[in-house]
Amino acid sequence: MDNAAAATNPACVINCVWYDGEGRRHDLPLERLSDMLDSDAPGFAWVGLYEPSEAVLELLQEELGLHPLAVEDARNAHQRPKVEAYGDTLFLAVHTAEMVEGEIRYGETHAFLGARFLLTVRHDASLSYAQARARLERELELLRLGPALALYAVLDFIVDNYAPIVDEHRQTLQRLERDIFSDTYRRAIVVRLYDLKRDLTYMRVAVSPLQDVLAQLMRSQVAQGQLVREEARVYLRDVHDHVLRINDTIDTLRDMLGTALSVNLSLVTVAQGETVKRLGAWAALLAAPTLVTSWYGMNFVHMPELQPKIAYPLLIGAVAGICLGLYVLFKRARWL
Image (cartoon, rainbow, N blue to C red; front, side, top):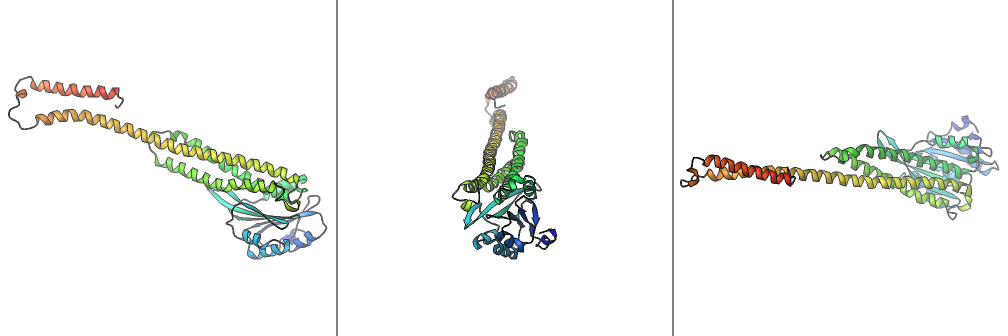
């Protein structure tokens, strides 16, 4: 069991490692898995794959004794988050997320948990679990608890990667608050708010089902054959708490974004109404002299009010008085 032997593994095999009873790491080829599992050697195997070929999955199905239905699910990367028991093996499917060039990309991780092995299969956008593996290799007391703790490390790593995405959306919403309460309509703001809400909705679809997955893992009736011992359930409960907190944050942000959209559109509507009122007031002010001048612009011969010498000044004064009266009226009504 050395690096030279492990080098014979296909490129889609990121890691194929045996951890002995002391937590020491030993790389090995896939073909040796069944030999190690059948031996009396203490420890467990952790195999990590990224978008594996059918040949590799068929080999691992034979080496680890996996159920063909579970292998078929792992081959197709369009599964809902779930946990299912196949004999003495648990199969999990969870969604992963990461930021790529300012956009959220989603992927999937499928995990097979046995009494002495953990197999993880990554598809699409999914960060490497090297950090989770390195963490366990530093904390040997966790590594000695078996493959269930390795599964905990993977799930904890997935959930921890949700948090920065949610925090970034919260900060973006805070930066948009000043623009949200602007009286002027800006299409870019509404589009950005919609994009944020859409992202958080997709995020919730990925995060929310994970609560049920972890809850099932912590229940004794699912953990057949003591695959998930009491020591591991304590750590899974911590991950479950993190998922609940992130899901609550997503719901809160979605509500705030919905409210922000409504407030922004309401303010714009109110501002447009104020503009319409001002235009109506000025139109009324212009309508008064227009009405008077159009009256006197008619070609009538007998208009006695045109005969006095002061008729013209009186007409000007009357028009000015009407306009002034309307101006004061609209000003008091706050239309101007």
